[in-house]
Image (cartoon, rainbow, N blue to C red; front, side, top):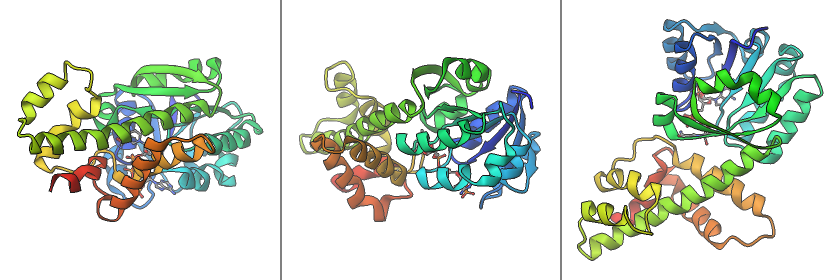
Length: 286
Ligand code: NDP
């Protein structure tokens, strides 16, 4: 099967716009519905081919892409024998979920045993990056595998880094997410203090934007916090999962800020889990 025949599993906030970009770049796209039919209908209108199941998608493609919520779904979908049997030898799995390094290695070993090449390729850049095709890919795997699928990745991403063997993409993504979670909570606290000290938000952004306390979260998420707009975006419960991965991976290494961030996200999960992750700071601002 050709490298231009793509199977795509996980058509959510990230997967749908990524799949759209592949179609726009002329790739043949094979998909299956999970619960929500909306993304499937939209992609079919744009030329995608629908199948009954992930196993049928696997049978129909040379490159299988997955971007699912977490480890549990990665195992459920990708370790299903029917999916494994569906993919031909020499096909490639590009696994883009923000999952754990251990789950990634487990999946890679099941695929590689059957001669299927694997690229661990989580992304950063959010839904806006997914829409514009400007994501950052943190790839773990062999350079020759990355080179085989580079045109596929370039349809979705602007920055593609090969960071080490399979598992290291997920590792660097976990570090990124630990930082992002902490920076988001810190940006919320900065806004709360600015309100208390009567510092206008615009001045805060302008000055700190050119000072040492700046962060991507402070510059990009403050306006949403001010408006109380928590439409996801990147869902809060997915960020909780990401910080949990970082804390689990740290094992006996002490990471007090990551621990505190995890507690903050866990404590706000029942009310904010389905909202944007910036809702972690909502309570500070009421
Ligand atoms: P969503 O929850 O929006 O989408 C998840 C998708 O996976 C949905 O299409 C869902 O289908 C599908 N799915 C769930 N379970 C299964 C299953 N068992 N079989 C097949 N499909 C399934 O998540 P996102 O797109 O936001 O995130 C996906 C991954 O990307 C996560 O790991 C996240 O951490 C990461 N990520 C997200 C970013 C963001 O800004 N949103 C940015 C960077 C990384 P259905 O809806 O039909 O159940």
